Length: 269
Length: 199
Image (cartoon, rainbow over all chains, first blue to last red; front, side):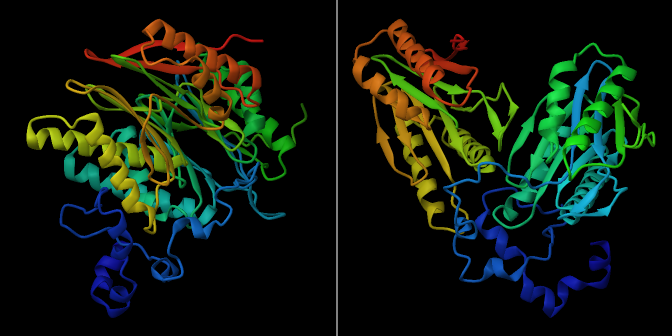
């Protein structure tokens, strides 16, 4: 994106042809997503969005009125919860592509700034891109306004940026975990939920089973970390699409600390 | 999956909504508020597709506030309902229709209480009582049977509890709690959440 600006891609005929601004006309009532210099956020918009065949979002999903009873996408287990000692974010490290383990050591939790991390699930490529876009926007906000955007504001910004892509195949489900003790789930469907405990992914029901039983506000730091690790481990045991290691972040007033211990899934219980 | 209900009395409107925010088979939140305050005496209850509900309801909410700032007086419930319906209708045949079902409840100082039913096809109907969701199939007959236009607040609350008990008995999904609010001449009042007793 910075490279695009330096190269003057905006002025090239290719960019004008692809004109991302057409997508924003329908959502003109929403955040216009200019930076202060007036340039629109530029993304590469897939050309099918402006074609006549794609007249209605619901046409892209003909079964919109008859929902699948159980959605088994997002091959991952991520979770986050709030307790007296701060916010814990944990995730497995397996990237699956159908039945193949594409990479056994993926970082599904990435820091956005010193007091905010985001756990990702869904399509790996989409998550990487949107994390990067979010990091850019937060950094720009920080430079312009000399303060960090709040977690709620970050979530709202992300939700509004994802909104034009609703109904396309963009699939991201991110959980923003940050100080001050906030946990917000944002997904490409448009949902934006603030809460105390979230788990996302194909292994999330198994993780909820462990967390709902044992999570208390008054846990100590060590107990909370070991609870998070156990919840992810149990999920990886049952879910084929989650596995390998457990990534763990603990966010406090001093910032995030990565307590990744390379405790593998090969330890016996 | 989600449930909204509104009951209009002679000088008040009672509304309730369930508190579950679900994603596929998981309840992600148990205390989610589906009511949006448009003004001091108007509430918009909104259910439907995940992102559409909040985006659309907040859009309506901000525009109602903007009207008040520009003109110095608030939109009446009837005007707000028609404005909402017009927006739904405009987006209906666009690339991004909003799949939301709404109840708008308000108190007008001249016309009294009003309850407006809107659905994702942008239909609008002013009704004495209304419900949205699968639960509506179970509870509309109860409302038909027991509703009277001059019911008191206690009778309306009892009627609401009857509906919630029926859902608890016959609806396959667990809806553990419902937010309840009343709108009258003095404004919007929060009532105690209803949690159906276990059977």
